[in-house]
Image (cartoon, rainbow, N blue to C red; front, top):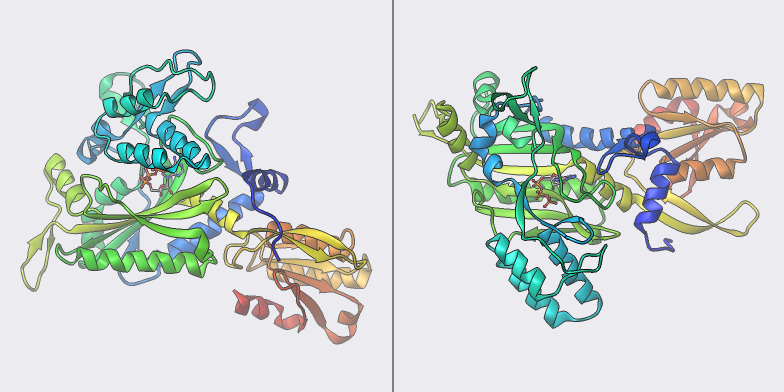
Length: 475
Ligand code: ATP
């Protein structure tokens, strides 16, 4: 049974201690908002992406692509990112600290709620929900006397827009004609390839295009570990449908994505679907899939019914027709789009928090000890199995090495021959390895090993030649 409440500190400390995540360029003091995935982290991240990729593209109606990060600058004019992809920014004159005005107000509301000032919190929240200009943000901050968490003063500048796209130059000349942007989302790579995929894949409407890739946003503030970073990975799928059928497909995709998270072990109480009350200008329905992190609820994926906004814009800016022509009915239309946009890095953090547990168990001597265990679904676990020779005996080493090498051909396996078996179990529990296999003296006679399952800690004797199929059946 679980005994403790999970904190971000325990997640961070485990991540660093066991090599899931490190600060970027740590030996130089780190780089704000950037993180590196270590040996175990990269396996978990790849398994999440793989589970997503298979669920999206191992079906008849979705194709995958991998578009370039740098795109023609007109893309961002058409999509509206150049003019509108900005956050409201405010500076404190005393501390020179910079904040997102909406986040500053949200944190103030959270503080009011913590102090049980519910009526006031509701009132400010209502004002925030109806903000329509930077002046409105500014008025709330001033009226409420919101102070800077660093300096404690209310010496604020006005609120300005800050565009989140990273700018750079293509080629050797640094003039305005050479400006390009690091993509802030993968979706536009899909929209501009809509016709290419349609013409080369023999797909018909409805069909989807899926992509996993890096995106970059020059966020004003990064925080909460991997939640808001400046470089991150997205897993996006745009599903192109006939106008009029979009509502039905939107509902279907909300259900498919709910099932995906559940299949991979996401707890019901840690996941919620929050419908957007205020819709973006291009959407006619939208929902955020939120996970309950130790710091509160946070979005890990958005599902949007985007109408024909994107393809229409690209058609207008490129001058190229982006229509679907039904060869039977001769119907011709610009498809509507239902999009599922998930963050791979936010999913990583959500699956890590979802799996983290500390429980009190009986130790080898009959006393009590706390074991940290990551209860990953076997499909996501960074290491699938660990092989232990009971002691350092030549015969046991030979059998266990042979088993280890053979399993290694199809899964990630670790070999551990040091310390008491109990300690070896704990080391694997802490990184979420679902199966630990012990080779003991009986193995020499009966050709069987003991497989111990991580969550139940139940042990089973399994024939050496059945180990691989036993594990595969549990996956
Ligand atoms: P937020 O409101 O949290 O900034 P968003 O609504 O702008 O997110 P989308 O543009 O819909 O996010 O992007 C889709 C997904 O990409 C998000 O659900 C999230 O998982 C991920 N994502 C977006 N921004 C970041 C970021 N700065 N760091 C990590 N992941 C991100």
